[in-house]
Length: 573
Image (cartoon, rainbow, N blue to C red; front, side, top):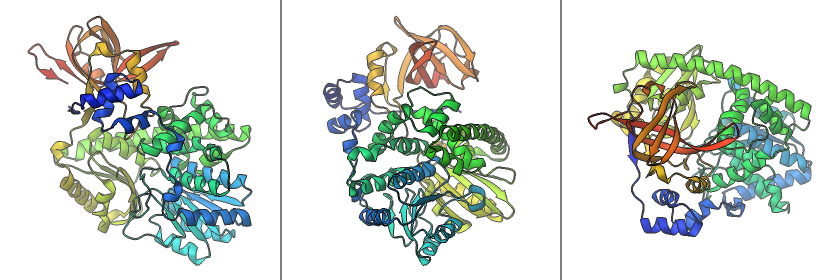
């Protein structure tokens, strides 16, 4: 499928020059920042993140109430239970608060629901267990905003509920002791993009201050916050950028037994941890437990104190992750066959797929891959008997939570945010959902606009790529949602050397601009081998990476898309 190239407008050149001068930045990177809407002040803040720039947690509505309640629980030795979701965001946040309360000798326990038996959200079984063991405070992580019945049940049994969550609120909120969610309209908090663990961190930060701890004490577990922030794919801007940057520095040198063991089994021990390591290596192993086994294993790994226990759990998670990958691949292939064989994509804006044979623990990953491949909002449902559990993922331009709200008459329940959601539906209503979801997406997005898009920051000549430019670019890290790695466009570039296919259908070749030659790799574009001939001209949309092979580091162009200049001067790609 040919991609549409969307090229950013040229920035204000005077502003770009000022940003470059203020920060000792390469002009091309200063231009990227200017075109992305940064001014001189915000550019300097972005390039020089500081823990001092974190917002005061007491700005969040109900924070003071929550802090007072937890401080009293610590001092009175009341029993506290931390109830989290079963993904990385949830278990990392539970670990964060559990370890903090444990250090203060507060009687604390945790509860992680079973994905299959209990489903998403605050668990009624967990509420009952919390009351049965005599806990007087229940703190949620990454759940709670939509759980009206469960919160009410806790209150009836004498348990004060403090919700820390980041999901979109519905029309009604539960009657909690304290609701900490920056996305609630009246939260008063200046940054709305925190992960669930990030909100839990703000609570922990405020309680630490109330207990007169040194400011640095609040930051000792930022490795857990970084893990959640990256793996939950929240925007890496503002506070999230700060938390991710300093948390990854802790992860790189972590002495936490569980983290050390997990890095070892994943083959990245001793490396400087980056976003890729979290999102594609460590995170999936922690998530695998909650998808096909017990998420409690992931939590136990993060809070493990003994190396032997950590090693055992890490090996277990690694094995589960291998099983998860096989399940995921089999379901993805079957889902693609459904799309290609049963759907007319020219009339399909929103995709809904269902099967009784799909493991509900991996359908979220499959939904992400389908949405990415076909560039359409996607719902993937695992049916069991008369009910179905679904995971949904969106694409840029469609608010998934708002879309599902318009389909709510067909759903038993749903929850999530703009890009990801979960739902529960009666099996016999799935065909109606397929029609309604497609119609709802069509109302917001034209099918002809669903061509995959490549967003390009700036034109760049190949000869401009050097160590100085790359060094300036790296000051924008960590890259991710909301702060993507810059994408450059180079025109009329000559292909040199001998193009070849490597790995899993990746096209590798060299490009030249005058006397400057750079290595180039185009992932999953091996089918273009015959078109990309030596001496032909190409247009490249790409990012710049530093690849290492046998101890030698080189700057390599990672192609997002390419167009070949034909003999008649036309472009194909």
